[in-house]
Length: 150
Image (cartoon, rainbow, N blue to C red; front, side, top):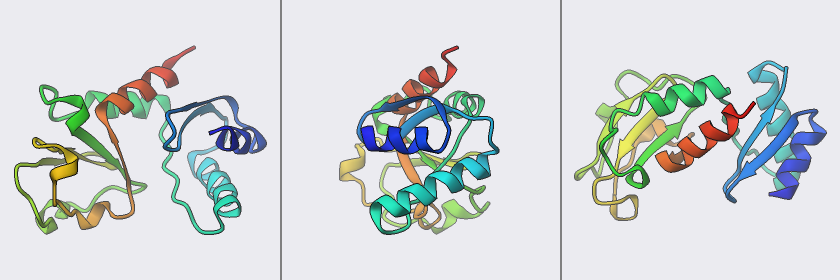
């Protein structure tokens, strides 16, 4: 994650902190979210040699995602947020396949999924989520906490 931190610092971001080795990074920037995303995607493409999608949320947006969890009584490690860069289509959940006991709800730029039997056993396919990235609610809570530090 030190390379990701260096990329962020190189882009001019401040107070850079990564969380677990899955591309989660929290930082400060005065730039517009679209500029932040473009700067990181450019650096990630140069590093990986191929396009890498980046999903940007402000501290307030992360707190709102955490608060919007439609499955608050479900086990956080079995409840995921699929982050998207755009609002999911209103009919996104009409096109899923392989559904067993999963519950799903649409968010602002997210899709929430509760995998009652665990994600590893699921055969669920959500076409609208193909361009997204998923994090469980434990990770979302930790990122929201890190982002809210003064």
